[in-house]
Image: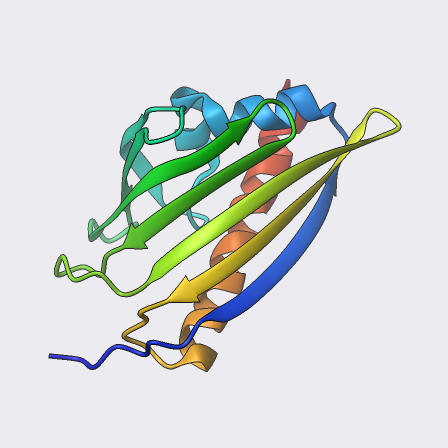
Length: 155
């Protein structure tokens, strides 16, 4: 059994999308759209179930190109359309073990018909060292948000 790191670690990132914030917000809250962009390049999400309300459940089954499945379960803490989403997630490794707990606060700021999206994350109870999960989360978010950007351009 791997020991958990009980310290909290904060991370943040932002990206500007050439789309109105109502559309960017919808991409996060419509399971059909979310399944199209969530996860690193090459991953699919054959299961994407979200109850978009405070206390609503999240289940996304990210499937890697090699067929490995990485479930992410979670719960919505706050929904303020079209301004903010707060959710807590428990991503799992390929063996079904929770690797960390993370609360994401996603803020959507309207700027001249573009959207500045800010993601602030607080990681707790990680089974991996901070330098490992921070690197993996950064790569995952960058890849996911590139997919989101491409999807927004198609709308």
